[in-house]
Amino acid sequence: MLNDSGSKVVDEVEVRSEAATEVASEAATVVASEAATVVASEAATVVAATEASSKAVTESASESASKLASEETHNPDERSDPPPTNSSPGAQPRISRKLMEMLQGAACYRAHDRWAFLYRVLWRWNDGEHEVISMADEDGARLHHMVRSVRHEEHDMHAYLRFRERPEEAGAPRFVAWFEPAHDVLPQVAQHFAKRMGKTSWMIATPEATVLWDGATLHTGEALARSAADFDDAGEALWLTYYRSIFNPARLNADIMHGHIRQRFWKNLPEAAVVPHMVTQAAAGARKVGQLDTVGKRGGTTIPIAPDKAAPERQQPSSLDECRRCDLWQNATQAVAGQGARRAKIMLVGEQPGDQEDLAGKPFVGPAGDLLDKAMDAAGLDRRTVYVTNAVKHFKWEPRGKRRLHKTPAQKEVMACHYWLEAELETVAPQVLVALGSTALKSILQTGSVTMKDYMGAPFEHEGRWVVVTYHPAYALRVPDRESRQAAFAAIVEALKTAQQIAGGASQG
Ligand code: URA
Image 1 (cartoon, rainbow, N blue to C red):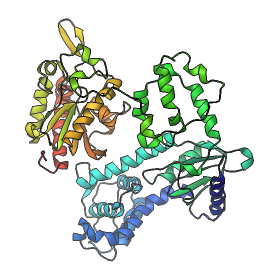
Image 2: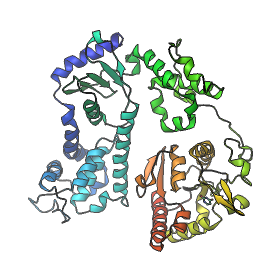
Image 3: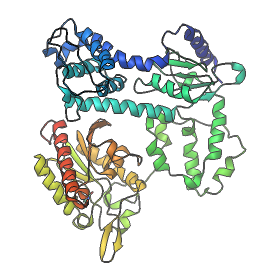
Image 4: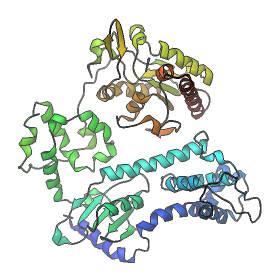
């Protein structure tokens, strides 16, 4: 149920929705096609402050960029002949479908200079600089990053938005939700829910706008609520009871659960308030009865807690030698810490020490280390200027005859060891991380549900640092055919070069 201010919010939406001129179904397209137009008009003033200012900004800037966008319809087959440039009077500029889609996505990315930046991209494209959409290009890399971030935000909003039911007698909307998106993804997310919820009416409120689905049409209006507190939800208690009853402590993996859900979403998730209690119950041996305990009972008062308090407690050793955060220490000779320049701009993250590293107590000194050294040489990167470490600090292995055979660490071990990577990140404060292989990527992103191929060749920003993803050197050693080995090696070299470029040349601060 909505409280007074919540009902007011709904009333206002109903009134405003009638007057709403912008239907969300159109909005997604409008965002796209407007991208270039808005880019042009807004950027025309801002552009002077950008690199593009060195090019002559003519009065027709606004007009030509909107032509760039609309031209897409005349050129749907993505021909590769270069577009005429703005310099030829009366020429029809063209942009490819791919660029159009990228602009469409990137236009939803919140950044103070987004329009100026997108305008620069358009301008460069129109000047024949088609590398502007390549990952190897500085602007191209940023464009890819914007597009990917927007896509992630859409997925997160699908996953973490929670509709709360209102009493039937209160009328439409039957469901309301509050969400604080990091980017302008409300129109497309509203489309997603409109398709899935049929004739059921709902409203999604965000700090920037409100969308109402009346069962047939989407209405977009301005922001009407300021925070989740505007929605007092009696359905919440029901939802929590339901959540407790379906919760199976025997299947609980708190690390994975927390790893999957980013901190900023926890505060608006109803279940965040009850998870710590259930985690404690499960840990205290309630694996069989934990579920039964709650079925059929309404809980007492649930005290909401801050998201940071929702995280389970773990051992916090002060030295690697004492670490018992997982069991890997038991079969390893020693823990292997990272090594390298204390203030390196670039940190290379591998998977875990191998047989030789375990004995030597140093990272990347075995065959994979030799290949990494060669790749660094080829990339012109001096190993002494970077910091080299691993996602997991103990060697995980299984016996095979007299040999100790490498075994991939489980995500719970990666998560347990992330504590040490975090400490290294704090001390070294690198600008760029090179994730060598999938385990490193999973550690950096703190989730097991990522696939390397989604990130390869596309540097992205994460928690204030750039991340470049490439193959693990051991892959380049063991992949069966020569051609693939060479390709993997070349990809590692390329990633190291990219990292160096991002770090601004010198790899040490
Ligand atoms: N493989 C790794 O990931 N790290 C090392 O240190 C050695 C091999």
